[in-house]
Structures are given as structure tokens and as C-alpha cells.
Amino acid sequence: MTATTAWSRRCAPTSPGKWTSSARSSATATRSSARGEASGRRPLPPPFTGEGRGGGGATLPLIQPTLRRLGGAVLDALLPPHCLTCDSPVEQQGTLCAACFRGLHFLTPPFCACCGVPFLHAGQAGPGGLCPSCLERRPAFTAARAAFRYDEGAKRLLLPFKHADRTDLAGAIAAQMARAAPEMLARADLLAPVPLHWRRLVSRRYNQAALLAGALARQARKPWLPDALRRTRPTPSLGERGAAERAVLVEGAFAVRQGARPAIAGRRVLLVDDVMTSGATAEACAAALLGAGAAAVEVLAAARVPDPRLEASRT
Ligand SMILES: [Zn+2]
Ligand SMILES: [Zn+2]
Image (tube, rainbow, N blue to C red):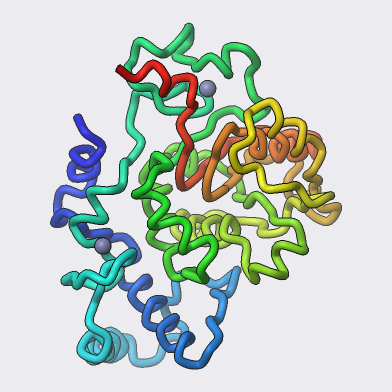
């Protein structure tokens, strides 16, 4: 079964290429961002708001949806819907065109039972369904999962989100993360993003992992702590570095904020990131959270970079 088939099955009532979850809110965000571009500055979504419903209280409960639909139709006429990641026209705002959709590879089994790294075939799984890295040493986190394989298709979605102010993509990406690991979300007591060092946060203006954590928390109706963790020192770009070097660079680079300790103690924490590579960052964050008394840490990323050692055996 291909990833695309799996995705189609998960979303059977919809047509291919559609990202139905949060489509409306994504559309709203896209339109808002379009307006933000016009004014030269894009507003960041508020971190603790709900799904944007009922902002006006209990007034006009029947008229509000009608006005919203009318407003949507007017906006669609003014800003014709286009694909989330290219300029191709689509039927509905907040969706992907067929070509961009086909470029995404949703992670489905087989993958490591612990860290979620994809296997080429089930025969790559060692005892307990584990990958070589987890067999060598179990990570501090209990398990990790991701929505997509990190490849060219995922980059078309994630790089603009991370580096080009496409913060409006957070809801759509988070919806796919939620579909990839519903059981993780269900058992989490609270969500926490991998932090940026404050200098990088100042230059980028937003933490992409925090946007995903916030969107996931709202979708799953779970509490989240956007600043539970902090980077104690800046770390260089991990880029093409190997797993061992990554581990050394990020070891001890994260700490739990003092004020967050009571909220973390005894809780199951779901750590959220945009891209998981070797797992070194997740490992360092998990160690900090467990050191602060977390009962367990699981990891949910938007995309996962395959282990080159496993890919090398591709025939
Ligand atoms: Zn497209
Ligand atoms: Zn593993």
C-alpha cells in the first residue's frame, strides 16, 4: 500500500489533494496573511486562543455562520483559491493541488517501534521492531512519530513554513500530524515545542515548532506550554552533520524553564517539532523534561529524515 493510498483511505470522503481539516481556518489564515502582506507585516496567531469560534459571544448564533459563508464567497471571488504550496488553482482554499499532494509521502508502517524512523521493508526491523540506533541505545523519549517523510515534497511545504513567514500553513500541517499519531495526542497531558534560541527567535520572529504545538493543542483540546523549554546556548546548524556529532552539539543545550516545572512534574509530555533528523534534539529536550520530573516524553514531528544507513540498503 502506498502512502498516497493510505492517505486516501484515511480521508475517504474527500477528493484527492484535499486537506480538509482546518480548511476553513487555513483559508481564513491565508486570506489574513494575504492582507498582512499588503500591509507589509504578517500578524502572528495568538498562542492561547481557541479555534476562532464564537469570538463575538452568544450574539446572532444563526446569522454569524451565514455571514461567514457570504464573506467566504466574496473572498474567494477576490482571492481565487490556490494550492497551499504552489500557484495552481484549487477548488477550495487551504488545499493542495494534485501534483503537490502526490509529492508528499505520508509515513506508514513499517517503521521503528520506538523512534519511528522509516524502514524500507519489514525485514529491517530488529528485535522488538526496533531500528539499529534504538537497539544500540534506547532514547530518553518513549516513542517518536512523524506525518511525512522529509523529502523534496515535504520541503515544499515545510521550508516556506519555517523560513518564509508562511505561518498560515501551521493548521494544515498540524492536522496531518494529529492523523499520524492520534494515540500519542490522546495520552499526552500537555504539549511543548522544541524551542529556538532567543537570538534565532528574534531574527525569525516565530518558532515554527511552537506554531505546530499550538495548532495541535487547539485541535486536540490539550494544554500546551509554548515556553516550557529554553535553549541554554545557541547551537550551530546541524545540517549534514552525523548523528554522533549532532548529539554532542545539543547535549545539555536545553533546560526546563523554572516556572514550568510544576506543570511538567508527573505529566506525560508530547514534544513537538517540525523536522526530526537523528533524534538528537528530541533526545536532549526529553532528557531536560524528564530531569524536571516529567512522567514520560513522546515526540511528534511534521517530517522525519530517513536514516541513511537504512536507506543505503535500498535495492
Ligand atoms: Zn500545488
Ligand atoms: Zn528507532
